[in-house]
Image (cartoon, rainbow, N blue to C red; front, side, top):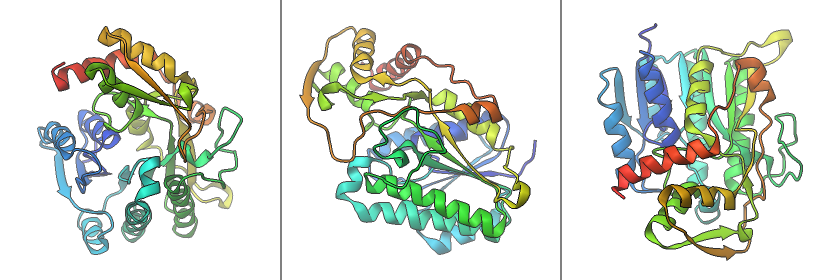
Length: 327
């Protein structure tokens, strides 16, 4: 195993934390970067970081990706050969109220990462895209071959822009890049603004569960363990630019099985042993009715098999929630 450190951006975030921890478990060295912003309670980010810091092969830096000179200096110092870029300003609804935040983090920040990879001959950049790039596509499952030129939120537009930026750098400079369109990732240590966390919190505290479109929505919920295992495999599997093509690829990362939100709420109620109060609300701007991932190419190329059922995944999350919140 190489002593060359892997850069994980957003290392104090939900997916970044799990990916960094998995890489450390495999004996790798990790440089974790995060700006620890206050989009949600930074205490949760610090709790994740405290776990990572127990491993001597983990080195943390609090830096904002939009700080061009700081990112350039970081890349020049470490000359990362592998980068897992998971930092971003997340959230569809938040992007409607705070658009400039998304340009700073998701566009400027990503450009600085691409420039760092270009200047220092990175062997493989893995970056986070999102199922939101599919917009309001009515059919399912969503395939990476589908058109993605009609985003319905600024967040989605920035993620599509990331894919285009990555492809252009891959084409111009032969940087191997892999984009991952994540479909509703959940599990222990997840963000508190995500649906499963919000539902669990509401049931536990006896508050109303807000169900948009009267609960008639389906999501391709994907457990974090399935995600981290495939990312750790991908790190050493850089795409090749065969036949004059850019060494660039995009995969869906999903469970390939949409679940009704009401069914998910029922599972949470069962695990907590209490019934929630349901508040039925209309559809929200920027939301979609269903997400459903076609993961055929990831299965073919990487042997990807989502192994966590929604029942097991919810049990796992609620057990973590009880322990973390002492419920």
